[in-house]
Length: 138
Image 1 (cartoon, helix red, strand yellow):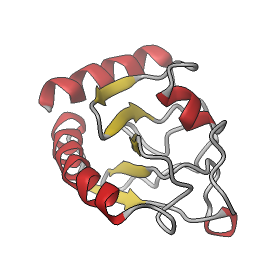
Image 2 (tube, helix red, strand yellow):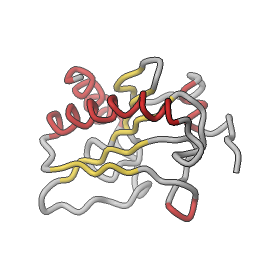
Image 3 (spheres, helix red, strand yellow):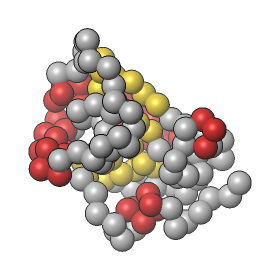
């Protein structure tokens, strides 16, 4: 399979579609997932084009992973989560729905099961407030 430069995340990276931006640099864009599995579900999207982990350049992966860790720490602080799930899917049978490499950080709360992805769209005002709070923690 090849990378499709018209995927939704590529369009967001090019500024063609809006997002609830948390952070943006030369390496990656961090944004809120609009169909979260839990409060605070955040996405880290490397800017280098790759379909997923299987075709990503190792140097690009090395550059983005410190940011993933930094966002995870800020997210846990802001959401007061009891833990964090880290997920990354490769190809449709594994659950990948957007074919641009991205990482999910999903806050976990004691006694609360995560929701199914894409089961409901989050409130934009809540996402904007979370994005602002996480950004301030970075």
